Image 1 (cartoon, one colour):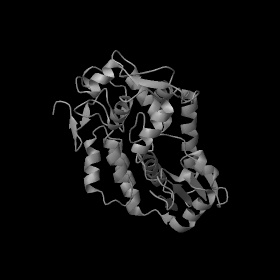
Image 2: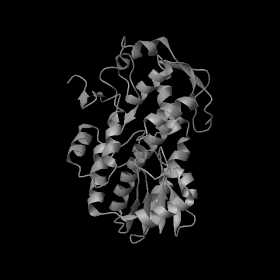
Image 3: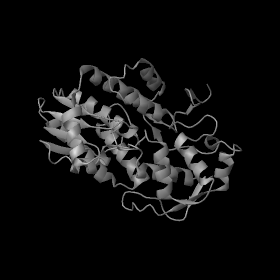
Length: 321
């Protein structure tokens, strides 16, 4: 038996269960994506992006991806595999990637433990909040065999999520039978990462500017506040830092900081941030961010430099439509 989990915290708590534990180390809510990102050219493209945005050495990133892919290739088809993933966007995109890959390899014995709440744990962010005993209880009480319908939903969901045309996500959501109970909700959260047609900022960036409009604050305080407001995202501190860095650079920075934001080799969350005059202009509606900046950023399979998609709060709109 193999348990595949997101995060060392969860992985370290499963020691009393039978089988081995594989902590899957990737981020599919972030960076360049296509339907087949196990291809060599996409591994290298993602590695370069993560090195630029998070200071993760490209060689380390590439080696990790190849090692993980090799591990999946070597799993016997009949091996029992238990996937542990919670409800948020971070975990759900990882889940559909893995189900997609394992189905290609014709793995026949897939099980799933997935929840969005746990009695007595509020607010519930994820499985890492639970003790070893609580996780063991989930294994024996909540573990369910992955069905053919769930595999199909994962395959079609991954294809839509990584498409260059994000309308495919809206179509998927409209036709979903919600066999994977939290994927539609995760995709709804995902759509709000497209820039607003009104401000040029996505929903998370808008929350950041509104929070900083009150006062200067530390990165740690800001991240905690936004995480509590975006409980269905599962956004990591490094992804959050990369997003804020994007608002701090270029000819019209919206934010400024007294210290570099966290990255892979330097994770300290001590920087203090504040709005610039440009940030205040965007917040008050005097400027639209996308009118004076071009983004080197990906939202699922959409590269923002090449495809100008916006979110109006209800549906996606392509620039010029």
